[in-house]
Length: 285
Image 1 (tube, rainbow, N blue to C red):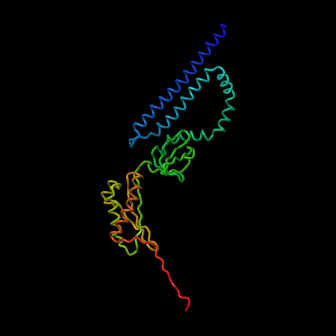
Image 2 (cartoon, rainbow, N blue to C red; image 1 turned 60 degrees about the vertical axis):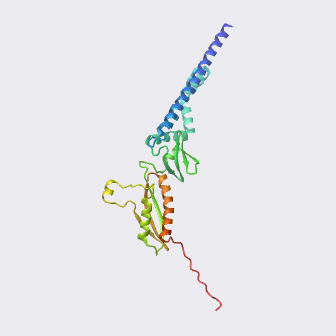
Image 3 (tube, rainbow, N blue to C red; image 1 turned 180 degrees about the horizontal axis):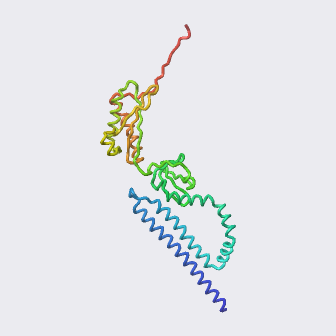
């Protein structure tokens, strides 16, 4: 009877400790995530704030906290401790098996760490990978999540992201050049058409002066308009416009096409379209 009570006391003591470790692990995990999450949310609206490192650190340390708690639980329970010791005795074979089975997982994890360290892209960057374009929404331990312009999420493994050619519209400088191209007829006044285009460009609220001090001093053209093609029935003009970021550049480009078209209509600048000549032959003669 005494040995039974002693055994029961030991089991109760062990169970209490195991539950305590699990509870402490859960509390530490959620407190840590809550603290980091609040810090990210507080500064997320700041233009110069980069949450990439904090987000990745949040997931990595959360994983470490869970693994440490699990390790304590395993070594607190004698039966599990014996199993763990047996497994460690054959660790060489186990490592080889796990390494072979999880090479993709390890590859994604290492690639994720390299992405966070080298920063070819960051959270909120506008990127294009293969045929996928959008904004980087999250970088997890295994994947990079891109929100495309249809509000869909494109999930790409980190190993692919680290080996692909990435077009990053926000890398180093957010300022973006937008080409605005429009065609006029051969009978139109080219100088007048170019003057109208320049006036519409420089008066647009999203247009910015990208010129450096030396360029301004040399009076470099603020918005150059060039003839870039002489086609079969039209002359193509291109305006080089600049905006603070790719989003503004896209909106400005759409607005300018509409505004220039309306101005051309008012000023009598013809935007051409193909003409067809129909020849009717009388075969009865």
